[in-house]
Image (tube, rainbow, N blue to C red; front, side):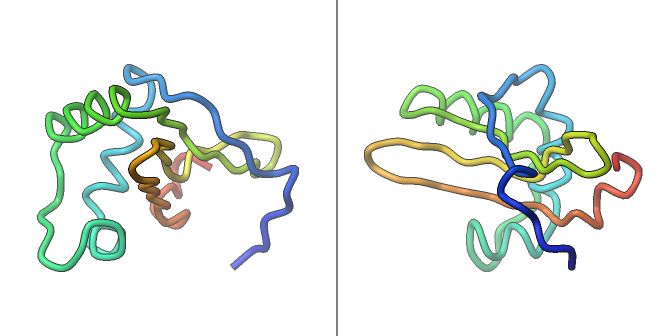
Length: 100
């Protein structure tokens, strides 16, 4: 695994119309769901992901986490900052093979 340098990592506010299809990869990955949501969590479809983000944007600030690979910013996860919780999901870079 390549070590990520601080200047190759950024977060930006979520843009639902742009980010839903990318998040679908993360939320359909069984390993990602196991570590973020717990054992036995079924993969999310696009409707569930959209509802989740709509709720999270009401209770906090949602950001997409990106890494710079070959001068291209690639979305790898999300984080929500709220006073009650800080959920974070990081997908597998190997799943983004065609995106990099």
